Amino acid sequence: MYILAALFFWFIGITMVLKPEPVFQIRESRKYASAAEPSMMYIISTRIGGVLFLAVGVAAFIVQFFM
Image (cartoon, rainbow, N blue to C red; front, side):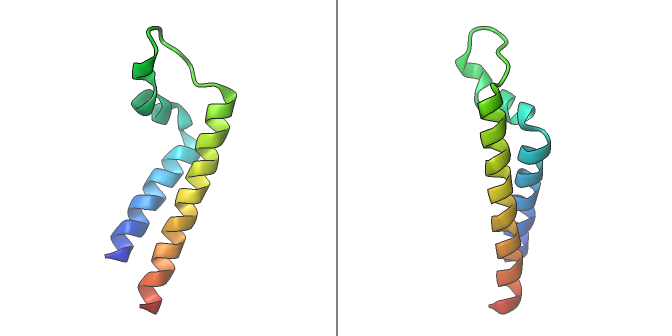
């Protein structure tokens, strides 16, 4: 079960780190009337969140072997 969670978090984390623009399109673009671009702060915070998702994925993978 934890291995599936680890894979899920890895997938989301890698997507957030490498491609923050599609994350913006999915989560935030509906809030704007025009075709807005994500700000640099949004990109940075999304990448930091992606690193945290990757860390949780690694932790879930490690827990798999110790429980």
